[in-house]
Length: 129
Image (cartoon, rainbow, N blue to C red; front, side, top):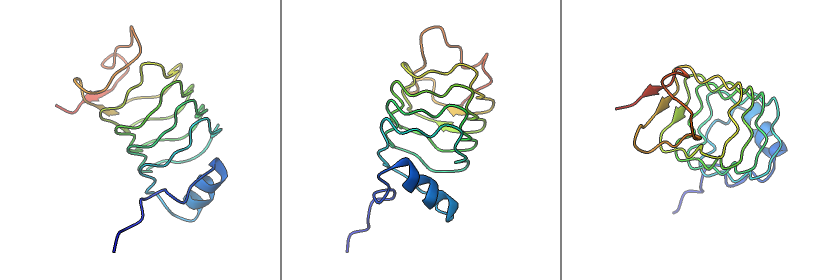
């Protein structure tokens, strides 16, 4: 018997917030491109391989979240809290990171990509290797 893909029943920002409020934290592979999650409290969630391309995550609490290999192309993370999050293999080249808190977030120097001129060490991130 095949297992359902975590997060596959999440189709909207409202679905995500409802599932989180009910205690769900595993949202691997969720697709919420263009979603408005401004100010959402989603700390500790697993968003590995999720698609948040073009999403508004400004002021969201993603502290300790796993965003490994997530698609954050053109996402807005202005003033979001990503302290202690996992950014392994995440492509952030076109992500808005103005005022984003990234202290102690893990990244892979070879597989995580940042916007031009962004210095992960200066921003308090820690390399995982």
